[in-house]
Image (cartoon, rainbow, N blue to C red; front, side, top):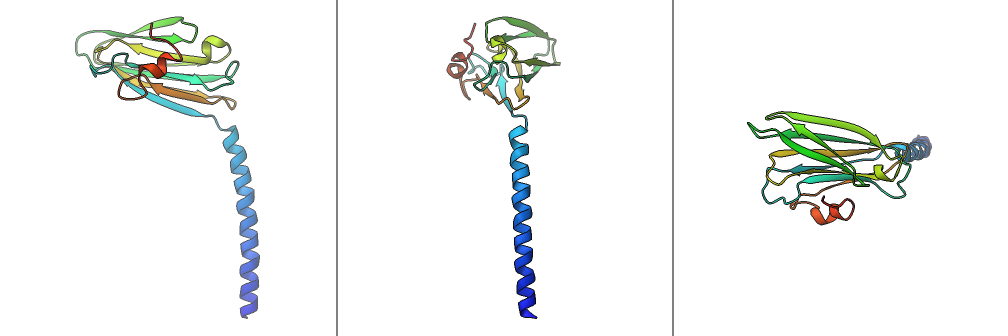
Length: 165
């Protein structure tokens, strides 16, 4: 009886180990294929932040690698419309306006050329805008995001990728 229990326990352990190995191999393959994501916050309401904003970029090698970026901004000012810019790696930019006490969200695809390797969201110091920027790598693209606020990664880390205009 004891020998049967020990034998069954040994067979079960081998079977379980094999199943875990197969599951781990499948899990590792799935993880390699999984889209990579990251995010960063920014706060234009904090007067200590000299260059409020955030930046997301494709980790090298990045040209031709598809990814999506998402921007969500809220205007905390009760009476004034505020603006922010989305600046691309090549220096092109688009300005967006956010009405008082409202929010704005934007999603875009990028990565087909050098200009789409990185985006940076800028707002003016004391602008009363705050928000989040996130990147979502597609087809195995790896992305990273940084906050340009002084209390986080800081302006120098962002200026090294896309300089403050």
